[in-house]
Image (cartoon, rainbow, N blue to C red; front, side):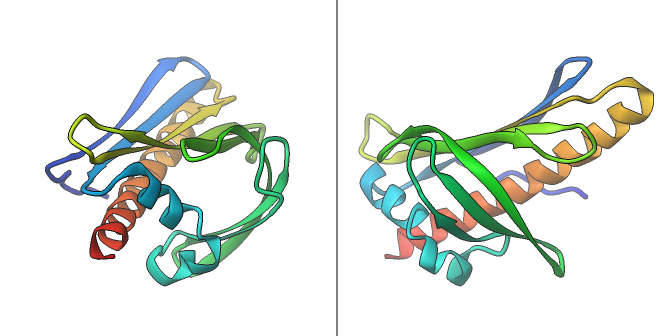
Length: 163
């Protein structure tokens, strides 16, 4: 799976330690952070513009329990998460077990730029990867996440800038 990053985008996967992969993506959005946050957290409308994260419901606050609906190809997964890293208007995420002894720490972040635009950052840390086979599984998972996050970021940018 290969793709070309566009101007104003960044995406990379790093492997800083034996049991950790980090995914980092960002996109510059030509709108103020308040507008980006509003679109990002209007969970009833996610499925109208996102083809990956298509739903989020529950107690959306620090320590609250949420259920996300995530599409991967033709499949829709329903995952339970505890909300962490919550700062209203700025960031939210979760850090929970994922599968096969792995855990992830997924964060969405909205930050103002000096010129009135927004830097939207989406990150993930996948922890618990061990050995040669674990490395290959972790690398594939992280690469897939990066591609998915870049696509989500592009769609968020398009949605916000079209409004």
